[in-house]
Length: 296
Image 1 (cartoon, one colour):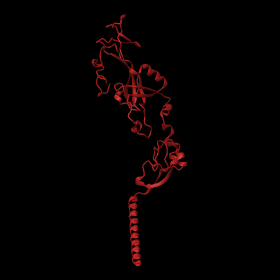
Image 2 (cartoon, one colour; image 1 turned 60 degrees about the horizontal axis):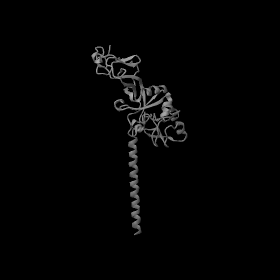
Image 3 (tube, helix red, strand yellow; image 1 turned 90 degrees about the vertical axis):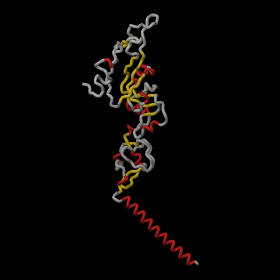
Image 4 (cartoon, one colour; image 1 turned 135 degrees about the horizontal axis):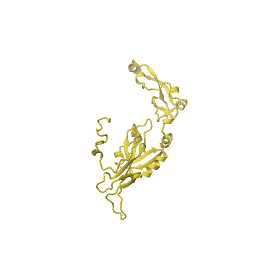
């Protein structure tokens, strides 16, 4: 009986050894197929979590990154080769997780890593001004942080009156600054006076959603649902006085492209009873020939 058990045990050992040998060969074959025509190349990988703002010198000194090899087919095209030279003087633009390969853009100059609203303002010596607008005055809530807008003041033209307070039908209304308009009595061309206050003002935030940091998506920056009518601009201190003096209820915003070039826009002639479409020299918002024809 004992000899029989011994034979069984020996057979089991031999079978196990054969199976192990077969498994080892299989693994080697799989590894060989992975590395076929793919020489291993060096990459730098995150060993310990790196927080946003960490300098590359700190990351190297604390062994937060290490050098390893991976198949060339898996190596990122923008992988860092020499962190001592490529990352010198740079800081992490965002939190870097363990095992993430280092690539160009993970570390940037410290002056472009925005850590808060005051940092964003300090660089350009700007301050904030905040106000609320409805959908009509706020470009249908299409405005996003980082956009640029023109600010207009829109006020109703108030009729002048006689000593008894009764409106006079024929006397022009003094709008100040040498501007006059016909009274609002059914014959006036315009009921409101609209003037540009500032052009190409930068939108810093919508509600509490700031312009996304470098390396951050707009979805990450926006977060929870927001009040789309709460606008914060980044402007010089003296501009705040002008904007607030206009009156929050009178502000109208017009979206412009980032390439928009400001140019003086004088008030229109409110005493003119002719609308642009009735004037052969104007006709359309783009000139007498329309927007499809380049103006001569």
